[in-house]
Image (cartoon, rainbow, N blue to C red):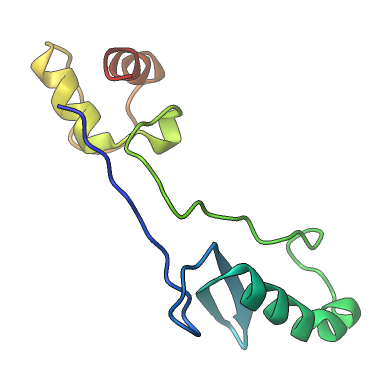
Length: 116
């Protein structure tokens, strides 16, 4: 049975529809905030003077990755394959898989091929 999972992000500041999640750290704590385009731009602009004068410790500054407001259960890469679903399907089709840990790439490929 095909299933579709929809994730709708809500802007944490104003309650509107958010378009991305921004992750940031300060004083040893890491935070995430869901923002729409306008609030994300405001957030980044408010930090520009500090970022321009700070030292980078995790590589070059890159725009925060945008997370789609809608996600589907259709998986294409092994990293995004639902392990529980894959294990159940593989066992039902006679394959031996452990309860935990990595699932072999060839088994993931079988699961993905059969499940779109």
